[in-house]
Amino acid sequence: MHEKGSKKVSDSYTEWIKMVRYEDINAAGRLFGGRLMEWMDEVAGLCALRHSGCEVTTAAVDDLQFKKGVYVGDVLVVVARVTHVGNTSIEVRADVYVEDKVSGYRNVINRAYFTEVCIDKNGKPSPVPYDIVPETEGEKADYDSAKKRIEMRKMRRKEGF
Image 1 (tube, rainbow, N blue to C red):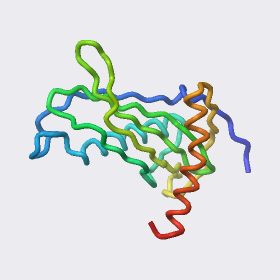
Image 2: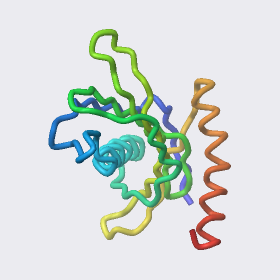
Image 3: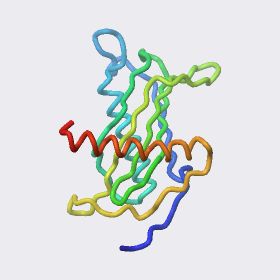
Image 4: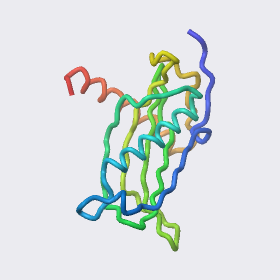
């Protein structure tokens, strides 16, 4: 087993901004939930790639919460940051905000935790070369609570969920 290097959470912090258009809207006049999930998955994957320098694939999505509707013309901001690193996996928290066009104030409308797995050229899991170093109180809280989320994932998988 080789020794891992380490990176700060801020090293791979990823932010993506998009204005919602008509093709993103469902028959009820709100953003398709699946479209938003797609964007979150992409940003979370990019964050994990930036952290690891490896190709990654999404293995799980947990705690997906839709808090508010999103409409045509809304400015969305998807923010992703690494919360935990395992042997072959990286947990990424993705938060989505609607940003007020005038004030720039951001209201959270969605959150989820993505488990990204580093893969080699044959598509097999490979070790994550870098551990994570949480620095801020929020980063430390995310890191500590990741341990419980990981245990819950393992329990659900064991129980067939």
